[in-house]
Length: 258
Image (tube, rainbow, N blue to C red; front, side):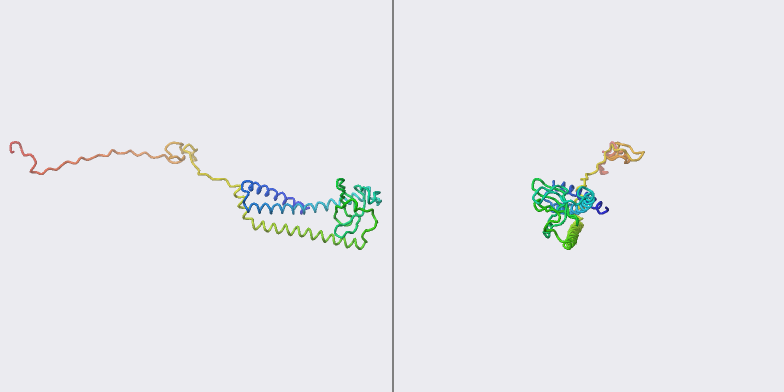
């Protein structure tokens, strides 16, 4: 259960990141880093969905087998339809497995009337197969695998499934490692997406002062909460007139002496 919840949480996170990357690509479609990041996210989402679906289908098959054992097919009677007739959902048949061509006990779980394809659920191992309706045979008819062959087939199928799941997990791990290496690119992208252009902060002379004694708009040099400009009395400049000096000989003498 914990693994399924982890996969679902990771899948939601990948979808959010993909939406952000696609939004960035809408304005900058030629960015190689964003394009590579989108490809990686798409592959991670696909692999995560595949792993999640495999786990979910395994549970559904278990439930289906439990229901079939107590349903209309529990009596063990083979469906009345022949190999050339129309099979119905729930019929217990022998169906070929594509890996080795042998027939194994299976139950019809879905029928496509448009193309004649039938989905069967093999009973002895957790897997299903889509075959053509004409390939189905009644139980215990010719071509059925022997008991020893069935055991070998079950073991081979389990190993096949195991290896397939391991390859998916390894590929997912490789992509995660690559994304960790490109973490700086993602961080730069996120920073750009959330970055807002910063302008020059301008303070008004009518801004509310921070201190109680502050005054607004009066002699504050354009910034509130600064002390008022001091006024200095300008003294009047006194100009001293220069007087011309005369030679004593040129000074006028007493009256009557000249």
